[in-house]
Image (cartoon, rainbow, N blue to C red; front, side):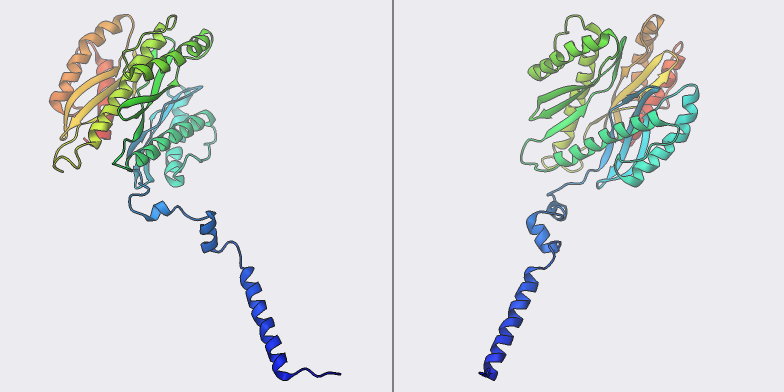
Length: 356
């Protein structure tokens, strides 16, 4: 038998060892952070580590009102650096047994929203409808916060902003409009609330697409009413104007931080929560500049019958008093006790949002 040369055995053994090492290296787990990131799988967004590449939202954001079987639910969030620091309801079902359910459920839902930081929260037992409406409005507020964070990036180019007008109560139900504005123009218009049930379904299905199209084409709230949908058209136009006001205020607030002195005060328009009164809802919108109320107006007031006369007399006086006082500590107007109380409550809510 032919004997192997010792040196040859050493060479063969060394080659086998090297081959084995190469094979082991080639079989290292695919979950290795370096390889996963290279493949784009499981890697954290690089933007989060780069200044300005992915902005975190900061501010107060109010979700759309979600209609439930027992009344509207609307959520407002305070967000700091992308995290929910406070959650509260600005509308919740009221009256009868709803008062007890709301008092029990809402604090739990608020706490859950802050803890979870998302709308993926559990419903409160015994408050199924309120919980569902809460989660829907919460998700809407989170979308707005996300949109706000996105709009703060890329200051060199025009940014799209989505704003929602206030809900307008009509004889057949609420109408609320949301618009997307880009470069100062309406790029998209849609309704987030519209009259429902019975004949309203047909009227809404016919009117809303036409109104949305007209809003985009006109770029203003000066659009024609749709024949056969007088009330819906009027509510649409009022909510659309509210959304345009918000968009304009937002655009104004985003200007001047670089071109003006940092000490220059920026005007800000905020809308208070809807205050339900015995004769109808009252909602106030204020414009604040330099810590002072420069304008106050009612965007919802009691209507119909004697309420029209009471509102026409009281609201201008309340608006004037709000500007003069700069606070919600104003006197009620004689003969308009309920409207005055609702006005002051909504005014205080608006001032809280403005930080006043």
